[in-house]
Image 1 (cartoon, rainbow, N blue to C red):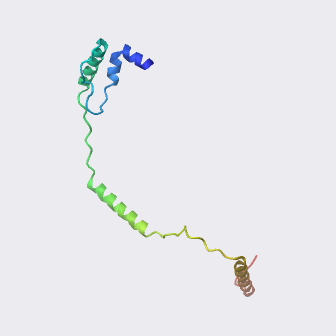
Image 2 (image 1 turned 135 degrees about the vertical axis):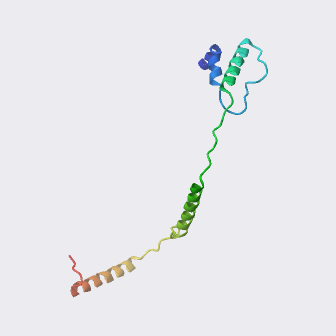
Image 3 (image 1 turned 90 degrees about the vertical axis):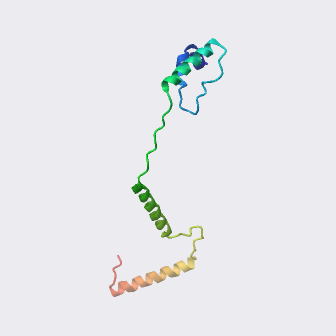
Length: 124
């Protein structure tokens, strides 16, 4: 409410805030019927004429050396992805039974003891 009241009270403030570079101008509509509407339209018209046409900046051309570097980078990434090891993480991990674990552990202990008896290793 307060914003609308301010715009009605200060038409030039609204005219200055409506100067936006979006699309074609919509301020050139049919003639307003109220004194306030005509006043607002005159302020908008003055602001639009003072602002002039919108000049959009020209997009600079991308240098060829940059395009070549991007192409080589994409080719390298493809090469790196193709060379990666594919892990099948969705497959179940094979499990070892308790008996198999104990037999492998006893074999490991036997090998370590024999190496320690020959003096190949020292067990602390």
